[in-house]
Amino acid sequence: MLLIDRALVEAFLYPARPGDHAGDGRLIAADARSGAVLWDSRSARAALLPAALEHAPAMLEDAQGRAYRAYFGDSAGTLWRLDLPPGPTEAWRLSRLADLEALASVSGRVSFPVAPELFRAVDGTGRPFDGLLLPALVEEGAGSRIDLLLVRDYALDPDAPLVTVVAADLDAARDCETAGCPPDAGPGWYLADAAPGDALAVAPLIDGGRVFLATHTRLSRACDSASAERFVVVVDLETATPMLEGTSGDALSLGRQALEGPYPVDGAIRVPGLAEALAAQGVGERFLAAKGLATRRYYWLDLLLDSD
Image (cartoon, rainbow, N blue to C red; front, side, top):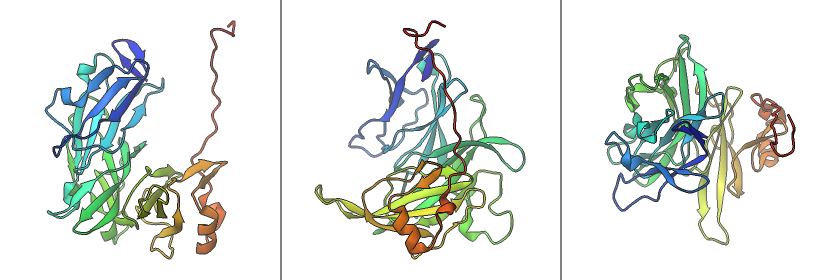
């Protein structure tokens, strides 16, 4: 839901098909009822255009359920922030939140195939921030790896100046050897080689201070027998340290199966092949009990059936 020219509008924000040129990314906002285009990144006031986009943005909403900010990554290692102030869409502002291309070598490439997981928090110094937790696909030569990143956005006021974060600003969690590293304040951290696999299909899931990241290695692309080997990694959000040890390093190997991500159900985090994976790794069910789920009761008024 967006507040545009004093009217609430239900909208979709989605990436358009990339063009033939590098950097030809395009994000569109369209009215969910009529399909009319409300905003196009090509018409943004700043001359900033993302590279090709592979996912829709992740949204932040206010207490009334109205979206006011969006975040997304492109195929050239850039994270973008889109501010959605109430009023005309001409006032929407697209900004570079982070340029993380340097996570790869000069000949490599960094991309963000899935949307970030967003959360709002306060750092160790008491400063509030918007947190982006997302995996990056880093391709170098004939191989690739998956890094996990936390980026903090402190410019919560839409009019506050936004300083673009670069890869050198992030603390390398693998190099931490002392307490308090990575720090609980600052631009953020990255965990190199966070998970096995060479592809991503679902966004990470944060629950109770833990990050659940699902990755996979493609085994077959055939339409009638498409399959992949799946992995799940659990990382401590505060310390950026893996919480499990398995036969695949810090990951649970789920074997060959259909591509479905982890999801919460009945107070637990369910992962495809969970029972088999836990049995093979000797991990108890209670480890995956959901900590961040809360039951909420919603009320609504039917104008046709309810009298008051």
